[in-house]
Length: 252
Image (cartoon, rainbow, N blue to C red):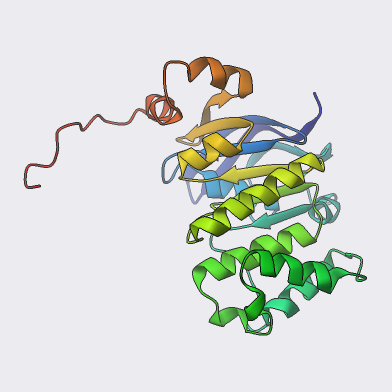
């Protein structure tokens, strides 16, 4: 099976504390991959490392067969797009200027780009903000603008860190539709989310990250078998060792 991402013995530290601890992960090409875990598990840190925004202390990362290092960094970035939490945007640009600028960096074909941009912005109900400065947008609109831009650069690997946070319900469904269409085109999509139901219904494979390590990798076959008896939420609680608190708070 061809891999889009291969991670071996990855260590990432903040000061003297390891956040990712000899992490091992292999993500098949052309899949929608879900990464779930409690707060502080290291999900956003892992996405930051994969984007090249964060360095790492040890280990090896291959993206589409290329080792993530200074020599290959530019080539990897040309085929990778991301929506981070919070999104990284140019605050003084208008929404359309931001899209055009990022697409220029990625050397996207200019012919038809504006039409595609307006079409996607209309789909996500932000077309009216095309000439509005980014710093005037709401949190949800900023997230949708980042997503639209990431789609327009036509990546081979799309990294989505909490893409549905602060986004309205209708737009979440539309984002999921676009993600599925990208998968059909062969794009690999990595999604982190706290919304387990969204991950369960959207993703092919799911990994549970806890205390800086992958505690479980659930492909479509193992998920089907496990979920005969347990929901994803129950499986998640088992692997992250959630303390049972069934008794309601006394004062309620």
